[in-house]
Length: 178
Image: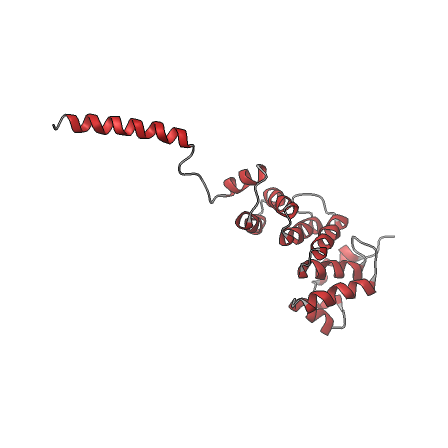
């Protein structure tokens, strides 16, 4: 009987291995940058995957973050749209592109996102990435404030003085081009 038990264990482990091969990867690599990139390359989206774009861009891997955010924005995640705007406006993982930045904010704003409304409103106030229109810009900021966005309320309280909400280090971006 003692000789039969090891033989049965070997047979059982072989059968188990064959069954596992039929099931695919049983313990996938789930929580690494590489796995998130692979999922993004496959076009996968979802709340967790989309939220990882933030951590990935903060780590400096802007190409992967851009891929994640583009997929997620395409799937309707407005937070990913405003992150795409930020990446375009700062040249992260691509060229500096204020027009694309404004377009992403407008898309998010049109879907009701308060951050998109605020950012697009600021773009309109400055004429950055979009034609300057102070009246329309204030309307977007007002909507964001009504939606509860505190920074929009702060801008209103400062009588729309943009230095209140953005660092002066960015002023070079907003200077008129002659």
